[in-house]
Image 1 (tube, rainbow, N blue to C red):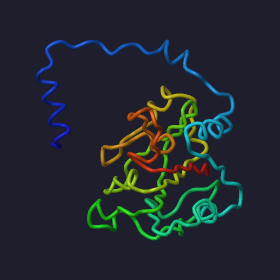
Image 2: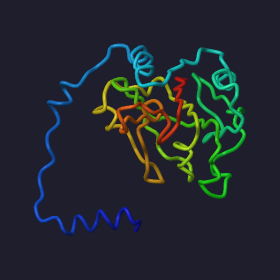
Image 3: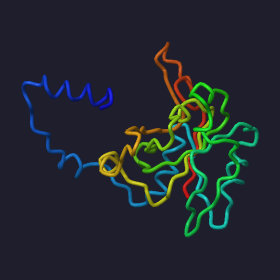
Image 4: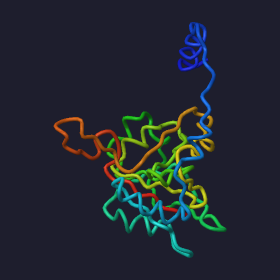
Length: 204
C-alpha cells in the first residue's frame, strides 16, 4: 500500500460522521455549454496566457513545433507518435525521453517538453494531463510545454471533464491551464514560477 493509501485509510478509520455525497445535478445542468468547442478553446487559450494551434490536414506536427520553438535545443517527448486525423505521425523533433534520465533533477535545463493531453476544457483552457512517464517532473520543469490534444476530446466545462479523467497506472494527473502564473507578491504577475513559462496546445 502506498503512503497515499495509508493516509486515506487512516482518515477512513478515524472519520466518525459520514455525509452523503451532494447532488450536483442542478449545477451540472446550469454549467456553461458551448456550441462550437474548437472555436471556444482557441478563444480562451490566449486569455489564459497560452495559445492553441489547430493542426491542418497534411501538416507535419514536428515542423509546427519547431516553427513555434525554433531555439529549443533540449526537447523531451513522452510519446513516440501521435494520432493525427486518420493516421499516426512520429514525434521526431524530440532529443530524449524523460525516463531516459537517472533522476528528476537531470531534467533541469529542458527547453521544451512535448506531452499528451487527455481532455481539454473550453470554459477555462485547462487540459488534463495523465501521468504516463515515471519522471512527472517533466510537466513542470520544462521552460515550455507543447500539449498534443485530440480535438475530439474537448468538453464545455469542468463537470464534463471530471467524468472523463483518469490517473492511469501511476495514480497521478493534473490540469494545466496556460503557463504557470502567480501574483502572490505585491500583486505582480510572474510567469513560470511553478511550471512552464510558455504553453501551446496543438489540437490534432
